[in-house]
Image 1 (cartoon, rainbow, N blue to C red):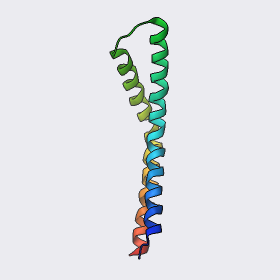
Image 2 (cartoon, rainbow, N blue to C red; image 1 turned 30 degrees about the vertical axis):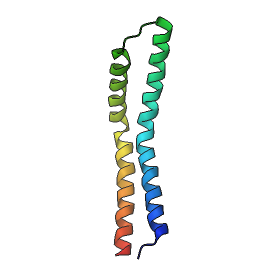
Image 3 (cartoon, rainbow, N blue to C red; image 1 turned 180 degrees about the horizontal axis):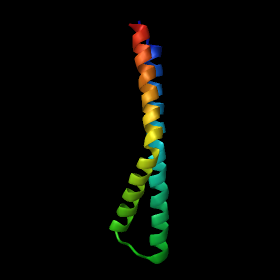
Image 4 (cartoon, rainbow, N blue to C red; image 1 turned 90 degrees about the horizontal axis):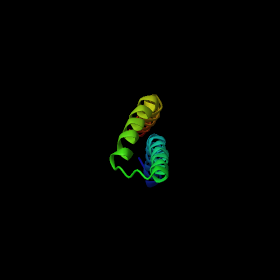
Length: 89
C-alpha cells in the first residue's frame, strides 16, 4: 500500500520533471526578451510587436532542438511511475 511519503515523493518528482522540461525554454525566452528590451532601450524603438515575433521564433526553434531531451525526461519519469504502480499493485 502507498503511504503519504510515497505520494509526496511522487509529487516532488513530478515537479522536478516539470521544471526540467519547462525551465530551458523559459530561460531562453527570458534571455531573448532581455536582449530585445536592451536593443529597444538603446535605439528608442518602442514597437510592441518587436518583442513578440523574435521571441516566438526563438522559442519554436529551441523547442525543436530541445524536444529529444524533453521527451526522454518525460518518458523516464513515466516509466518510473509505471514501475512504481506495478510494484505496488
